[in-house]
Image (cartoon, rainbow, N blue to C red; front, side):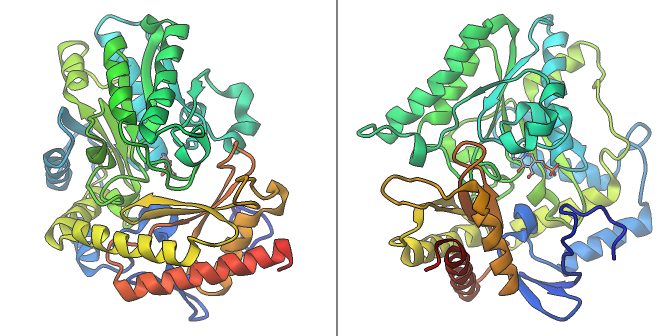
Length: 445
Ligand SMILES: Cc1ncc(COP(=O)(O)O)c(C=O)c1O
């Protein structure tokens, strides 16, 4: 009996009663390895005493003020840390309560920028197919997630969607990774020219694609070309690092590994590690300057922007990542995880691709390795893997629709940054059992 409208009616989830490092414990005392930290959120694991104390300390001072009246030390200190670690050109931070609000804010800031600089005819957005940028109407419109958009199609603002950078499925036979990357990046230029460059405001992309493709990194050179095209046509580059950023790929920001800086960047999940709901937009100097020289007003606001308790939690999380040198552990355990996945699944009959970076990995399941044919979407293989995992005390993140928005199954693994080598082994063992058990229910073998 529940009065909560569940994500899936009729499905009663176990009751989480506690958390301990990389484990979640339910009311019956069963332990689950949190191999994804929810959807790549709990990067410090559960029950971190320093973060808990920071939240208590802030609540003892003050829990809420509106940033229309006050700023707070925690909000300022967090902004200082974020700017110190930000890609070149990023000058300011604005806070939200989560990812969708961050992307929605970025959409509006991109538009405001062009209004401020006297180019109000720029209002169009370009993004990619098989992408996810959030659940509100603006962010859903920008995203290219077919299933999540479907019911709302008539209400969504018009957005252009070009091809994703998805080497496993997109690279032509004989084509090099670099040539493939340039080919799909050039779709951006073709679309800008088709729409009329003077009408295009921004291009949105996840640096490493999360929930829509399953931890797919770009090929070398792709984002450099994208950056050049944006610059050539005066279009802003907005990188959505809500899932892939804040250390998940082994560097603080995923775009560091691409050698590009965005004009706007959204972060959330790992920012507060789930200890409080918080997101942020990192804003480029040209946008900050344009607003300052123009209206002087950010035409966008939220009641809980820069929430003091949220900022206190995120500040403690970000300090912990730095003080405990956790990015080094992400890289170290990421290599261990990559090797273990290759060992376990490299020759698996139904695994087509293993890809990722740092502690952000996807194992793509296919019906036929040679043709890359996916399983029938109606079989809901990824949901079966999730269920088999939960039964065995494993939380892994199932993804469907990666092939064309409808079919495709990927198991995503993104453990907390505190994970140790033995635990990585435990995770891969459990993922392997869950995958084989789920496959047995659809193939009968
Ligand atoms: C890349 C990306 N953008 C935006 C969002 C939306 O974030 P939220 O669910 O916090 O609103 C997500 C969430 O999964 C995401 O992965």
